[in-house]
Every structure is written in C-alpha cells, then in structure tokens.
View 1: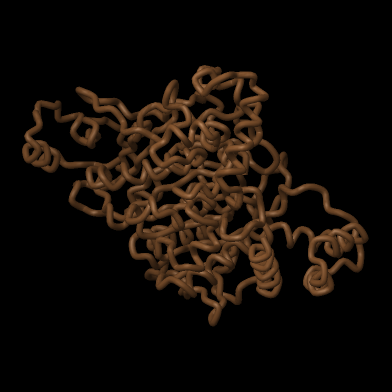
View 2 (view 1 turned 135 degrees about the vertical axis):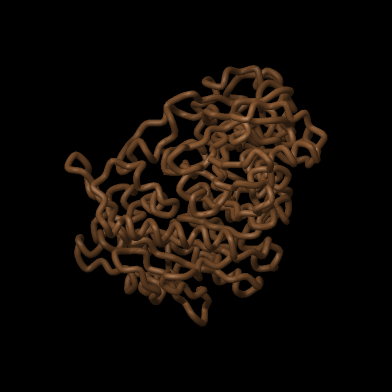
Amino acid sequence: MKNRNIYIPVFTLLSCFLSLGINTRISAKNLADTCRIESGLISGTKDSKSDVVSFKGIPFAASPVGDLRWKAPQSAKSWNGVKECKTFSASAMQSTPTPFSMWTAEFIAPVEPLSEDCLYLNVWTAAKSSSEKRPVIVFIHGGAFTSGSGSVPVYDGTAMAQKGVVFVTINYRVGIFGFFSHPELSKESVSKTSGNYGLLDQIEALKWVQKNIAAFGGDPNRVAIAGQSAGAFSVNYLVASPLAKGLFQRAIAESGGAVLPTNPFAGMQDLKDAEQRGLEFVRSMKVNSLAELRAKPAQELMAVRTMTSPIVDGYVIPKPLYQIFSEGKQNDVPALMGWNANEENFGGQPQNAEKFRQQAKEKYGEKADEFLKLFPSGTDAEAEQSQLALSGLQTFGVQAYAWMNLQTKTGKSSVFIYHFERAVPYREDQKPFGAFHTGEVPYAYNNLHMSNRPWEKTDIQLAETMSSYWANFAANGNPNGSNLPQWTPCSPKNPKAMILAEKIEIKDLPQREGLSFLEQFYISKLKKD
C-alpha cells in the first residue's frame, strides 16, 4: 500500500537507578514516565485512561544525512539529562502523504514533518517493572518501500500494550534514500555492497530492541517482528537474512512475502544490475562524484522512481529467498501469515475475456489450458472475477503458500495461516472495498477506534479476537489461548487457514488449487532463469 503508559513504581526505578550508580535526584512526578536506555534518560507520556506509557521519537541510529546518506546506519549518539520522547519524529523522506482510494487518513503517515533524519522508533508499554519480561512486537510499516511511517494512526500500540505486549513501531529509509546502489557506494562500504539501507535500518532497530527493550519491561528473547505489505516483505527478508539471526523469535507477515518472483518487491534483482541502474541515474543527474550527489537536496532526488526495493546483494540478502529457504538457511522461527479476500481492489481495470485468454497463453504457454480451468473466462464477467481472484493470490496469497511449504520442508517451526474476509464497514461518503489491502491492520492491533467508520458488534469482537491471537503469538509462538477458536498450524498434509470474518473458524486453505498452480509455475520459472 502507498499510503498512523508503563506505570513504573517509584521504588522500582529507584532501585534500578541505584544499581546502575545513577543520580536518583529526579522529581517523583517524572519517575512514572522516565526510563534509562543505552543512550541516556528519556521521558514519555502516561495515558491516564489506560495506564500505558508511550515513548515516541526515540533515536535508534544516527541521522543518515550528509556524508551518512547511503551508508549503513550508525549508532545513535548519547545525551545528557532527560530527553523528551513525547511526540513522533519526522517520517522518512517521501512524497506528501495523502489519503486515496480505500485508504483514509488513519492508514496514512502524517503530512509532516518529512525528513531524511528519520531513524526513530516508538514504544508503548504497560509494564510496572523492568523485570516483567513481557513479549515484544516490533511492527514494520508498509508503503511499497517508498512511503509510510511508524506513526500511522492504525499502528498505535496502546491497545496491544494493554494486552501485555511491549509494542514498538519503527521508521526506516524508503525510496532512493533506502535502496540506491552504485559501484562507488559498494566500494566504500565495509561489506562491499550497496542498496539495502532500508533493511539495514530495520536490523539496526532490532539490535536497539535487544539492548534496550528490557528497560520498558520487555523480553529480548520473545521478540516478534511484524509487518504489513512492504512491512511483510521486510519480515520475509529479515527471516532470510543472516544479519538478523537471533534478533527475533517469531515472524508475522500480513499480505506480503518475497520467496517467489511474482512482483517488483520480491528482491530478484542482484547487486550488479542495481549498480548499473545507479550509474545510469548518476549520469542523468549530471554530477561528477558521490560527494556532489550527497550534496543534492532531498527533494531533487525524490523524482526518482527506480531503485526503491530490496535486492539480492550477497550480504543482507545473500541469495534469492527461495534458494535460502530451500537450503534451510533461513532464521527458523514460528510464523503467522496471511492475506485478505479483496487484495485486488487497488488493481487496474480488468481485461475482457478475449484479452485475458490471450495474455494467459502468452504467459503460461503450455500450461495455459490448466490455468484457464482454474481461472475461467467464458464471459467478460467471469473473466473479471478470475482476474480479481488472481490478483490477490498472485501478489500475496502464493507468497504465503510457498513460504509455508518451504518452512515446513526445511525448518522445524510452525506456520499459522489466516485469510481475512471481513468486509470493512464504510460511511455513506465512502465506497465499499470489501476486505481490502491493509483492512485487517486495525483489527489485528485492536485499533478500530482510530477510524470513523460504522463499526458493528461483529467488528469489535473480531478485533478483540485477532489482537489476542497476535499477542499470544508474540508471547508463545502460538496464537492459541483460552476462549479463542482453535488455530491449527498449516502444512502440506494439513492445509488449513483461520478464516477471520463474521464467523471465525478453521477451514481448508482457500483456493488451494490456484495457489498450487501459481507456486509451481513460479518455481519452474526460477529454475529456468
């Protein structure tokens, strides 16, 4: 998608400060929302209604500007005194965030501020002591790797903190600032690679969590990475990356994955090709050096629409993800993943039946007849329905299906799959988009109150159930818990999915035959390439 307090008793913080040899002369009224992290003291904001404390705009890395533009993230600088962390930082540099289509304001990053100085994160916690060791969710925002922010309203962590989770949202560099490759950039780097700065930012944030989350009552040994859309692609990359080993213990991917080359975000481009594109870009900018390019104003670079997604660089992503998972070299952690019933609602206009059949023959060759049996096109109306179904399956569904098959073959950890089917309610001034892309997010994190929509009792119950599943999964690597419908793991022998709709129930994996066809087609394409 393109595109939104701990109550710590005084005696707990005093004992913590004394054990660290820290001056404890801080007024009592500040102790409930003041915390020491590696870089220094920070203060947050306690919500009187929920007893949740939020800390917003915490720097997890140095500002990636000037000479640090297009370099791996550097450690955040320390400070003296108490740093106020009560407001969100700037979002990453991107086009002005504007609501469009089904994505109303609560799904979009704030209009301002936007800046390259964006490497900050946010924490919500209801822990009363730093020794509580609560499970942690680190949420990675979507936005097609070109937009988005950890401050999107539907990502608010208050409700999840009330469920016992320490909730974290992060920013990372997007667009050309996060994914620009060039031979000179590769040459100057320690890794001799360039381009995956956005992923390196995410890894740096996870390192920060390992070092600091205990201060908020979190358990660094129970960290779940979660993300939606580009955030879910990111989760898949992090599960595959050797650089992220040990930084998390569970993975949640909502509508996204990169194990098959089904879309532009699937990371099939390698470093050499990406560097060549970088050379072409530099020539177009008429500069003579990287220093000149780094001196260019951010807005001047914003017009670039290439080099905006991860690549196989041999370092962050050593090989294509299908190969990494096939060889069992992924970070073997429990995974919860799925997609929505109407993902396709942001696609283009469907082709008529004749054009659809023609394109099928061109793309699937000798497999075209088999394809058209699964996605029929006897009439224009039938072809339209097939295209709608295909769009969601091909972009998101088959990624989850292939990821599950690979994980159960080469890993030991369970995979839980969902299919979100609840048509999101809409006002009279809105259009119906069904269970649209990103529509599950306010349910998963119990944030329906962030949207001005005519919610029904069904929605409230679904949000309560989904957020409990997500919280349980973060805590135990298993979504099940008391008073919840039983969710069985998905495997080739037991292909089941949790249907998240008016009725919540475990059923056979939707459209499995179509998923299997698409998976085998893209695997054969990988082998040919």
